[in-house]
Length: 473
Image 1 (cartoon, rainbow, N blue to C red):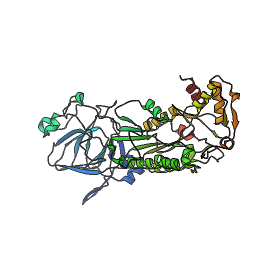
Image 2: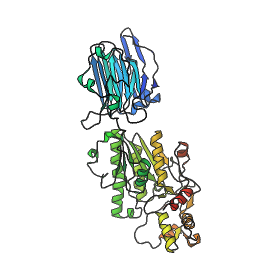
Image 3: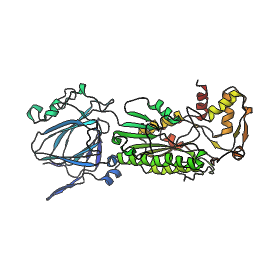
Image 4: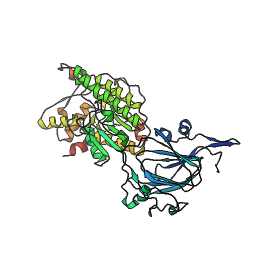
């Protein structure tokens, strides 16, 4: 058997997205040879993302004779394939739904090479030497409830140039009966779950992502995130992303005993469950946070590196949720402020007051920027599509920071009313004599989103979005 010694650890791309060939260092002497078939630390240092795919099983297929032919099978998990002894001709066909459906790649593998096969790519091989041991790591267990896809080894469209003609080798009856490419049902993408689907952000996410079989929108009645059965409520290995748009946002009620319990349940206990599920199943967790994680005393905009210092219960629960999500290997935390979407909100309230002839008193000592849910949804889409680095991203409307008082006057102006009807008042004056508890508000809610924009995430101008919002019927 001929093995190429002395290679450097490296990776080669293929025409099939996500399918990559790895060159592995093999060290030999008179006693034989040695290789590190899977070395997480060195692969990570080399910039190879594969070490985090989370294998749960290691299988070996030993083949006595030359010409043993197996496949083409596509499973709903990732696979890392290598050869322990012998040599194979491998063939891979993209059977995933999308533009690359039907793409083919072939190569030979010996102990000095390996290949990473993403979920939904059909995998097959033919042995070129006797006593070939074909090994593979996978990141899920076989399940009768999972989706599997197959392709006939002799498919004319794929036109795989097998070294040994298929009519001269042993092929299983099942492989002979697999469909041609024209009849293959493509492997669907991993599912996306959106929680809090009926809220302001949830509705924007519906508009952004649309209705597809692989996207699931769930309200609290459809999926209770605080249920002890959450771990078994879905086959979580079928999901690639969870977008958590569910949250308890009644900042003043959160200061009451009952509200405090509900806030911690929704913003911490539920988030902890999602973080646990995401970590265990290799899921990307997207979590929406708030400016309330800061106390608002900073002179200048808050960056993603600033230490959190929440003032009230709501802010404390959001900060705790952020900490939990940050421990998930693949996560995005979007910190935002002054969110406006479909439903009841400050802008709609001001427009209604203007129309009804009511002259409001609005706080003029809190500074920040409006953020429209359409922009949050677009930012989430961009982070997922570009596979941006995990971490915290500030996502707010752009433009000059302003106050609630300024925004109220602008709403009056844009709706054809006299902005002078709006009068300013301090936060302390506004809440003086309030019935019931009042949550402390950060006076500075300005978030620095320059790093987010530099990452290629689109952000709308708050002033432009406000005008567009009020112009909609």
